[in-house]
Picture 1 (cartoon, rainbow, N blue to C red):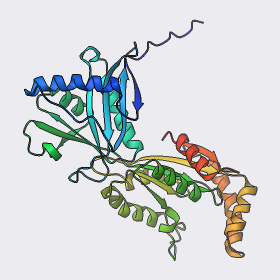
Picture 2: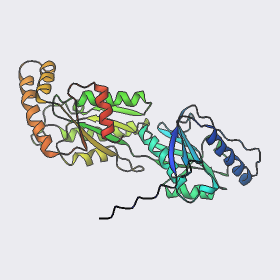
Picture 3: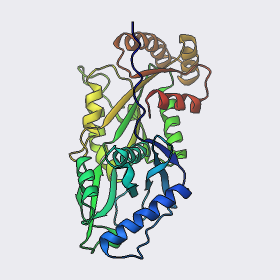
Picture 4: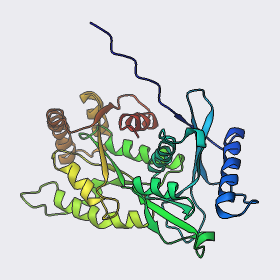
Length: 339
């Protein structure tokens, strides 16, 4: 049997930097000369230091030479929206055009924006850069009102891409650690500077009496989430972690719809279940629940629900919480979710 042929190496590879290095600055000087010729300004100098930067990405060819770069930052301009992230200084050397380098750099910036909880990407280009405008349109960007220093510049074109909200649902039986883990996920996001929120979904549907056909108040929960979602979006929060049991296959679509928008489409939803041994869960419940009805209910429910969740297998990944630090579990959950 013949071995499969080895695929050729990619034309470019993209690497992240914390700040522009000498190679990136060399590329950007080439960009300034090119734009100077296009716009009739031989002394043109562009911004190349980004204090609120999320990162700089450099594209390298097969000879490991830097052939392109882009930067992403949280803007400080008041006329932009909370949750906006700005892409800056996209440039690819003439010798490297036509092999997907610009698109790869844009995708790297977009992926970083999603990881950081941005709700929209914005950028500025110009009428003398038809190649750039064509690329942005191909990638789904649309015209927006010019902003900042370019608000009244007839040569400038500002564009935007709406990003779908990302929802991470931490599933699990009673005592498995879903609320603790979801809160820890939010703590990790906050440490990383992401725009995020934590929702303990059980608190949204603690209401009595519960309908006979909806004992866990699912309809109330998704009504509440649908009502709250626009407020999170308005405040520029693109990452949501929710602690809640998932027993219905339709719940994934319900979360996607609740946090979706007309411009960005349905939310992107990942479900990760946390689990622990029965002895571990029983110990946690004994420490948490008062004596009497609630302890008896919790002990019975955790066994029943664990078996049900195992059988349903609605999760994208499963992570154990036995004898583990909550932040370590949260990091594993994010890795399992490929976030």
